Image (cartoon, rainbow, N blue to C red; front, side, top):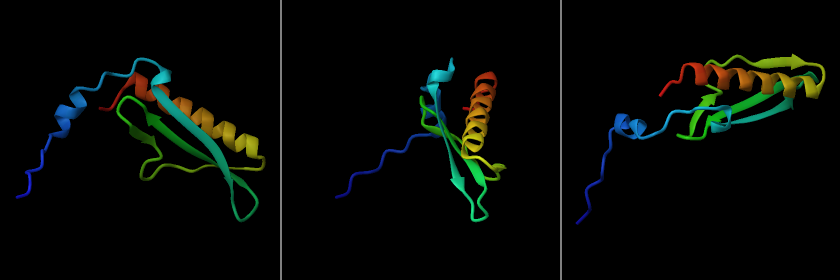
Length: 94
């Protein structure tokens, strides 16, 4: 006989997560990739660590670049990540 699965409403799970209060509650992973034409595109991943939510990239997210130098692409991705964190701190989406 199989055990019944426990089903939890997503709203009850989200209610138990404490709100983010500073930038250390996020992880920003910024890097770059080289395109076929020799330019560099910024690559970014922003994660809210308290609930594991991926904030960037999202469907329809704009590309970061192109740039001629890898460091410019990485720096642009990092600044975009900091911008996303600041926006989420100002107006969190839970």
